[in-house]
Amino acid sequence: MPSTTRRVMIFRSLAGGAAALVSSAVAWVRPAEAAEDAAGPVLAKTKSIPVGGGVVIKSRRVVVTQPTRGTFRAFSATCTHQGCTVATVKNGTINCPCHGSRFRISDGSVARGPAERALSRRKIKVSRGVIRLG
Ligand code: FES
Image 1 (cartoon, rainbow, N blue to C red):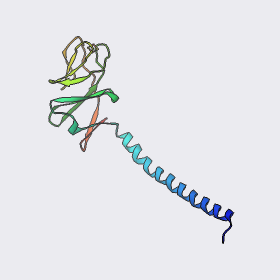
Image 2: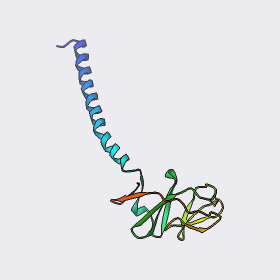
Image 3: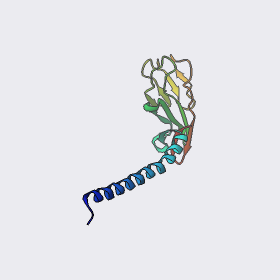
């Protein structure tokens, strides 16, 4: 029968093997995560963007719109008037709550001031029903 010290050594050996397996699994996952990062962060699923409307993604400070079915656009959510974050998308415009500026969902151009410049366009990639920053 093995001594206590020997049992401890066997246990430690098995535990070390398990730790090596876990670290191998972690190493296996990392390249996939890196590939996802290279593809750009996910903004939304296409089905979550209403046709003729859009969604403000505050965590990314981006507005994603779908002016016509299957056409997606993205703009900075920072209002060009004084820098507030736009809040809503309604009736074909992206709307700033601070002073009432409105921007067209098709190209970010000014529909109503006081803003004088369009929202800046953000590049996106749409693939397999997912919209990512490009
Ligand atoms: S900051 Fe948007 S309208 Fe003034």
